[in-house]
Image: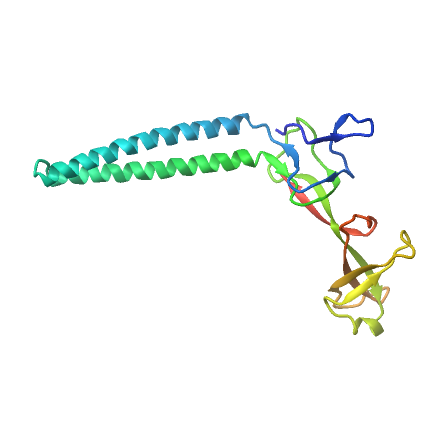
Length: 222
């Protein structure tokens, strides 16, 4: 079950949940799973680790005494072997307990769904308190630092285009302005109806001016 998603200031200056179209920065917590069970597991695994470490300390002290007694011929070889075996077993238990702590800590960290890059929310599919299954799509975000324009060119021009080639794009929204980009995709064959080749151009958009071109998007899942 999910906890409350991140809140932002609305037009009335009051906090509200994230909505489609909101801009978020990398690392922003978009939503959070209720942490009680995961935190309890971490606390229990830490207690188990502390207990295993205490047992290991005693086992090492016993081994030290056993070796000293064996050197004075006051302890048999089987007894020394038993002390060494106990120390090895105790060490293994500490390592296993540490692994459980690491797993529990990672699970607790995963309770927070964080934005992997700066961008805008295109779509959200979860609400506060909603039960969701693993791998359920939670948010669709778009990176606005780059946008892609796709258009068709005739066969007389496509032969002169290569991946990485510099291209300048103009849009009706910004008449008189041009945007430099580079070719990142060339269709291997022409469209059967239009008989033109689709060309994809990626354009830097760090100022976020271009919004109507197809954005690079990513689905964030639980």
